[in-house]
Amino acid sequence: MKALTFESYGKSPEITIAHVPRPTIKPDELLVEVHAAGLNPIDNMITTGTFKPVLKYELPAIMGSDLAGVVLEVGSAVTRFKAGDAIFA
Image (tube, rainbow, N blue to C red):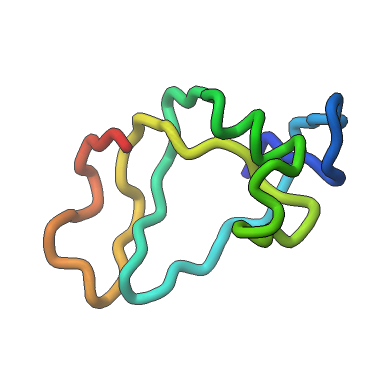
């Protein structure tokens, strides 16, 4: 899998496209094949460290939370979605 990542906080953090292992989902999670993604002002605040006192990211961290795609896999406790569903978040 590919992911947009950052390895340190700062005003101009180095952001790279990295190959990351496919995640193992938890019972209440979805695995989504992302077709479109966006970064917004909160992503900038995260990389600069503004939210560091409240949101503790293990570095390197994967960026982005706005996306559209297709569900590949659902956790055992998920009832609202199924593989193949088109979603946005």
